Amino acid sequence: PKEKGWASDLCLYEGFWYERLAGLEGIMFAQEHFQARPTDIFLISTPKSGTTWLKALIFAIMKRTCYTNSTHPLLTANPHDCIPFLELKLFREPPIADVEKLPSPRLFAAHIPYTSLPKSILCSGCKIVYVCRDSKDVLISMWYHMVKMRSKDLPPLSLEEAFKLFSKGLSGFGPFWDHVLGYWNASMECPQRIFFMRYEELKKETLINIRRLAEFLGQPFSMEEEREQVVEEIIELCSFKRLSNLEVNKNGSRDAVIKNDMFFRKGEVGDWSNHLTTQMAESLDQITNEKLHGIF
Ligand code: A3P
Image (cartoon, rainbow, N blue to C red; front, side, top):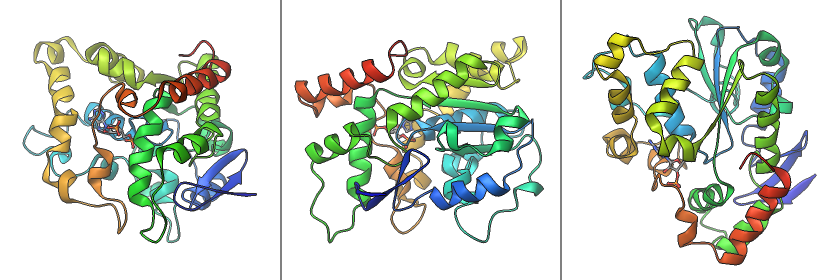
């Protein structure tokens, strides 16, 4: 089945929608061929939920003994180059990246819904970090992103149209709420395997949440690291201000359409209030209450 999407037609696969088929072939290929290792670490999210920030943080936490402050890859590379998406990059299209050659622990990211994850990810016991964000801020962030992705031949996408599509679940890797619910339920069943994070909590209590994240990843900060303020350094290295001002993130690009600066807009909680009408906001909150009661 097909529906009109934000920048192209949306295609339904295993209960979720895919824009421009982005990620779909990669998911199918991964379902067939990806061999997870118990030591793998996956960052999973719906688009525009803070993936770029979490990629930077997980990379910085896991590689903290590998680099000095001046040689750190996050100073010259976009976080998406440090932790690539499985379905959108490595397995996107032939030739498929040889991920077998990568040393453990391998760091991957994905937007794949829980029920579409390759079986080996579920069986291997590898760790998954899931980040989610308030649907209202996700909608606004996605709208800004997709307006730039839309071909110049199409009429501009109004926020009203985007709101309608999003509310009906029609967005890439959506329905948003089903995606979140899949990982929330799985994290409740298996908290040692799936760490469920919220963008808003990470913004509010960054230090505590990064310590928790490092513990979950099996790399807790030692007393000595705490004394040396390693956590604070990581927070600074991965901050919106720092990352968005780097040359690579101001002027670099992923491909002909996607520029690196599309991943750094405002980086705030609650920007929706500058865009959505009260009615729109209430309507999204109602869907969230109905579908994700108890999570938000
Ligand atoms: P806004 O559009 O609300 O500013 P994703 O990485 O999943 O595509 O999400 C992008 C959103 O995360 C954007 O939100 C972006 O500005 C925000 N973001 C990117 N880097 C960030 C950082 N270091 N800290 C906080 N938010 C960040």
